[in-house]
View (tube, rainbow, N blue to C red):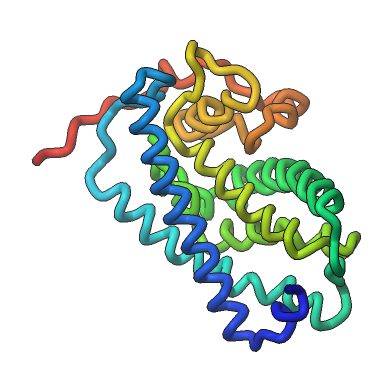
Length: 252
């Protein structure tokens, strides 16, 4: 599998990346939206912000996400080039145990990388690049890749440093992209996946990121709240109540 990836021409690497991230984006958004409708129908969980979306929000999110997918596809040239130049190597015939352990390690690295990158994007020099994502005051599963190209490049760089330090399996690196979009969909679902509010543990990720979109500052983490707790950037669960702007329903 690794040899097949290395044998690709540059344009094939980009095309493969674009197709892969397109499937992840649209597939996960549709699945998450369907899951939310099912859970709402059986009365499990709740919508966090029930206001109607502004006219054109979904179209804008999909349009911006398509550009991010192109950035991710072009960004695939970075790990491919590192492998071609011998700066990094892929594990050959990895065991299932190795793949699992590497996937867990990449998960925790992804959490740290996201928090650091996200916190940087809220600093004065970079916040103008992050503003596009925050046009969605109420997040949706289609918000996940609605990013400025610079932000997409920053977040897409997550596997590069680990690859310089360890020979990962291609399976674990691919699992990282699946985990990332799954967690991103959870955070942008605008739905609390718990029988009683407020949700606790990992299921509180959607409420935490909902508060981030509503308040802008705070709750910079991904699935885990530990980095926000340590850094003092964790928002209280009622942080959005006083800040939530009124919104009229779009005319029909």
